[in-house]
Length: 420
Image 1: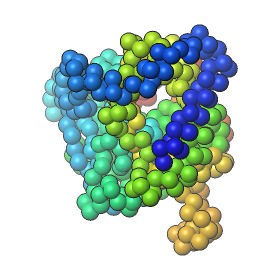
Image 2 (image 1 turned 90 degrees about the vertical axis):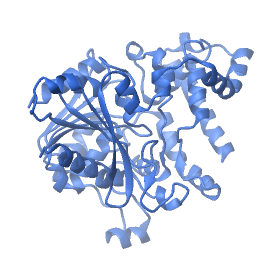
Image 3 (image 1 turned 45 degrees about the vertical axis):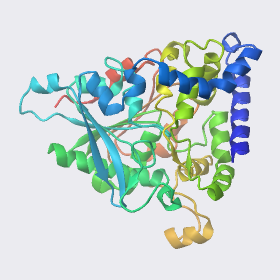
């Protein structure tokens, strides 16, 4: 298993180096230097030692609820149990000052879904005045942050243990048919609201498409769906490392099963320490490599790359997922948006047909607004003429060009969301 993972990482590093030449990143890639090798090899140990000796840092030391409270927000942890027994750790964030300005008024509810291998921290790490969850809370929204089964905050089940293969037998299909519906229903029950608004980013958009197609009983309560970097098929992806990762999943899964390894890239002290060491401003030799890898996977945008935040982002990411989620993504490298393909025999037993059926997006009647960045190598504007075009009340994909900043995107959200 270790050999396979190392080989994959080597290929990713090679692709990052090649991408740098095509993306005109020669100026930020360090020349090979013996000290660079020493830094790379010793990063986990150095990072762990630094974690012990450094001063308190809220971005590194606090969980999402503690962090939000530290910054003055009302934050809560809720445990939501899905129909199939997974216990999700849900984070709720509100601005008490804004809420108290209109006593008795119900705050509009917004549910937020995170990308692949990520968590609710995705919407918090930038801090007040920048992070989307806090910006929405400041505008009076009651913010509910989803953590799908299998990530750092959703590792519990009513009967299964994470050591059992059965716990990890899920793809993004279950995120859309179980996890997201459970949260929406729970949030409505807790707040007394009959409708919510939904914001998804990358895989967070994928699961909304699944829910809309498969769970119209819940989707009818979504008054507006706003998606950033929408993904409903991967055939148009221009990210070589992303495609390489997906293609490698069957090998990684096969290698991991005998060792009892059923999930991919969970958050570990070693990973966090490596990111905090190699990607920090104090690591001028290796931080550019972190930037190059990110650029080669997701796309380059120098103006919007805050390198100082990289250690903090990597303290929360990756947050883990099942091999099956990634394998389902691999199956979408061919055109179409379909359910998990189990092979002809199991497909016949499960679906009553030899092939995996496509999601029927014409079932979706949720008002939908989608946004993408032209530099995004994973999402593609071609989706608007593909499977997503079947969605009713759909406004075609909007490109975020000169306004490709989180603040500008948030302004778009404010313009779309009614205030009451």
